[in-house]
Image 1 (cartoon, rainbow, N blue to C red):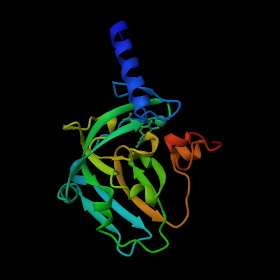
Image 2 (image 1 turned 120 degrees about the vertical axis):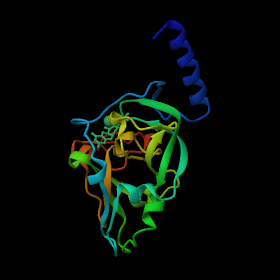
Image 3 (image 1 turned 180 degrees about the vertical axis):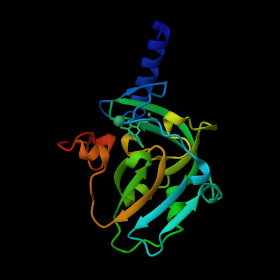
Image 4 (image 1 turned 60 degrees about the horizontal axis):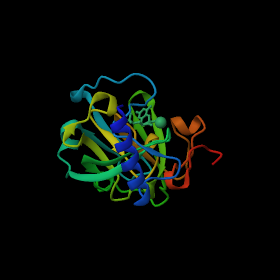
Length: 204
Ligand SMILES: Nc1nc2c(c(=O)[nH]1)N[C@H]1C(S)=C(S)[C@@H](COP(=O)(O)O)O[C@H]1N2
Ligand SMILES: [Mo]
């Protein structure tokens, strides 16, 4: 980064901080870093499916074409990563979580979800967090198809929680009555992960 870029970034960071948009312990990034465990999967769309299972009256399975036919919208949001970067004003295009929930009838005791990605990656989230109107299954970022390393063909985005909850290469979710740790939560990360409360590790 040049000196000018650094001072420009610092200025923007100060501005976001004063607007109350930069959570504690975070700094601003303009680039979009890539972080995940394991290899970027190679997706075969004809064999791709999206499943909703667990505590639902009627489990759902959608093919790629069926998922694409669900109503789509755009969410503008900031992203906060536990590795201390925040990226502002992202536009994600896709299907809201609430839209997918219209396809199933959750049982009354369903309060949590385990979201599943390729290679058995999972993240646990309270259903209330997923039901926010900004939680989206995204196909595109800023109008462009998601790149493979950011989650192509489909990625969950939960803007108000740390980004490890935003499962890349997402393939579905299971509803549950009790909270159970997902992949990073098994490795010491927080069960909820609210950046405004700095819920980084299970000890926070
Ligand atoms: N399927 C899957 N999704 C994942 C991960 C992963 O290992 N596998 N890592 C998470 C973590 S720890 C982070 S910080 C974000 C990073 O997203 P980015 O690479 O698009 O910045 O993806 C999250 N989603
Ligand atoms: Mo992460």
